[in-house]
Image (cartoon, rainbow over all chains, first blue to last red; front, top):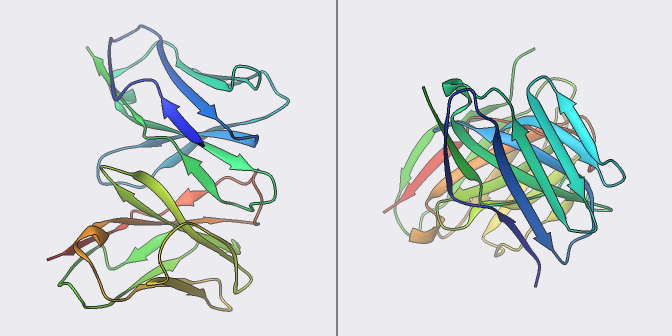
Length: 113
Length: 114
């Protein structure tokens, strides 16, 4: 069956450390993988997109990797801050399915001062 | 540029009723997608509209329907509401219907079915 799983429901880290979130999928061949941030009571906000033939993408303190052999993406936040506390969602975008996104359950990140 | 707007923000209905939710995309965006978010199932794709045509559909019963108008605004309708339809309904817009497009989400409509 097709699945997309994020490593854990909650991740607690200390301010200044690097947060690493995992997204694994099975029986999908995504064209793109996207990461979103969602705060309570709000809609998701786009963070990064990586293509299937890209290994790594960076944006400021954010880094995403994509390994289509392992069927895994890692999302890193370096020098984390309490303001980074939120739920992070990975989403697959498939070929020939327009703008449809298939979301993981999300990982709730809490950064303690 | 104004973001995606959804109305109403909150709604309480009873079983058996029907409901219509509205979404206004970012100016210039022609694709509108709808998602249902629940604690148990997470974010699930309902359907996508582009140029007034449904382009993709998720695995939801026929009670869930939608449409898009010529100005790209979209509505979704749920008929014969069930308790399990209680959820946050999110609308997202993008410029085109493409997997590489960034989706811009609205704040959602929280529906409670009693």
